[in-house]
Image (cartoon, rainbow, N blue to C red; front, side, top):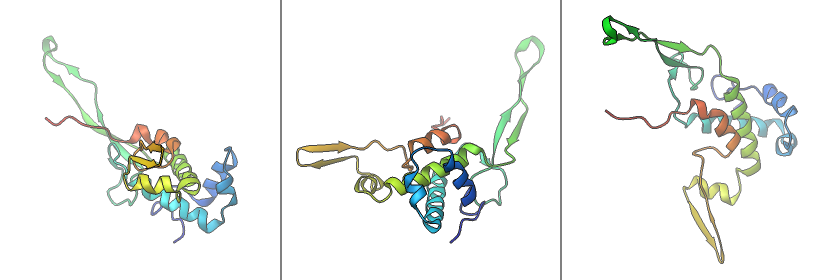
Amino acid sequence: MAVQVGVNSYVTLDEAEQYFSERLYTDEWDNADAITKEKALITACRRIERLTFKGLKADETQILSFPRMYPNVGTPVSKERGFNLDFSIGFIEQEDVPQEVKNAQCEEALALLKYGNNTRAKLQEQNVVKVDFGSVSEEYKGLGKLFSKEAYELLKPYIAGPVAII
């Protein structure tokens, strides 16, 4: 399947090429053929889509999570003696997919090409947290469902955190 923006990707192959043209240490991307790059972008998008994001999809018919809309709690309006407050609630809607999301998809695609088929990655995907190899052991502290720390950091402002249950 080819990359289709809005269906299985946030970026086109050309946009990803442009992104990587300005970034260091992209040998795995540079050495991959177009089909492999598209597969990496599609897989990266799938991994991003598994995350839970703040807000709601901007359009309920859109396939991917972005663009989004977020509740906008208005400024409280003070009534007599400042006791009763009225809040107006609306939504702030993104018109386009944020550039950070597009960059995160590129970063995750690169990480997939670099690390996606190694033993450590396979163990982490299986939720293994500690492995012993004779006298050597490793502990894995995952970032969630992404291989790329950079992608995770780019997406962090959009990822939903824990909420209080009242």
